Length: 269
Image (cartoon, rainbow, N blue to C red; front, top):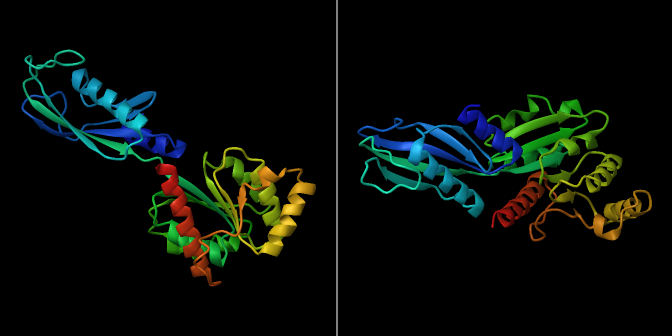
């Protein structure tokens, strides 16, 4: 597997890693500037030349992974027999600088319901480096023309048209994915709430709606779904920041996005 494919796989699996690059190489060196290596907890892909340079870089990369740091780091190596090395002698005669860049474990968000609020929320979240899943039972909500506003997205956008059972998408979401339920159909919302509570690998679960809607849902989740109070409390409603008011779709979307980004910051630190 190439280093590029490895980095993509780590992202898809939400696993941390470090991209190691030969930043500069002067004189004789095992690899030229630009050579790359991806390091994960239990594997490496690519090479920056082997020997002491690569072994030290791998050791340090794994230290950065365990420390969960996001700060890049530069390491300088002198390749001569006068230097005491941790992993043996490299006496090529040149010097090498190696850049270690932690690869972020990006957040994942699934919006169930790409209506007015859902699309406005997607437009905001698409500007973030995350995996964004848009789920809707209605094909006309997910057309290329309608989702064209996301064409320049920074996020990786995944579109799911699920005409029958949108709750099946829950099992496909990456571990820790945050779920926002805001479909056009209260029965669909209720089914998604029940299914989300039965899906153990999810992050937060948010439901849009009024207090009256939630009171009905809460009773149904307890009596028909068999969920206890602590499990039902995994669902947050209303969603968004309480001090941002207004019922316009864009205003609701800003409030929900701000609250979600705050959650991401809490996860990181």
